[in-house]
Length: 200
Image (cartoon, rainbow, N blue to C red; front, side, top):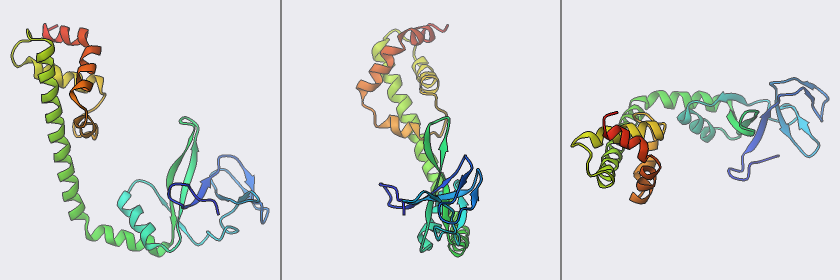
């Protein structure tokens, strides 16, 4: 069976064009699941995967637990015309494994919510730290900037030029940048920052 190089998983594809099963000759219309073998595209029945149920993407905890509980699982991919690459759409797992995973997710929903809140607070802290560092660099570049305005400029620059919002994971990535990266960003945006520092 075809497996990905990274995870060594069984791979199932959602077809966009009508096809025919290479084993039984069944017509496989657009939207059907297929498994690629050495002979060609096979339906799930011929690939011995028809006993598995489809679990769409969207809930990482549910997906992870369903795969763990299922003796056999497969990754479902579909070709993206806009991005020109295969993207994960979900998994195939046993119905019993999916049901058990749903029960486990309900049991510890409060715990996972607490973890999400903690992660959100961590992102907010990283955001504030990065904006403050950015403000310090603005003062070093523009000593004549009115007191207190450097924070408004830093907040504006981070939001506009990094195309990010509050609670974004981008702040955690920015936190890892050194001052050289910050200075390069400031050099690229000198004109915009000058206008802001003058109150324009």
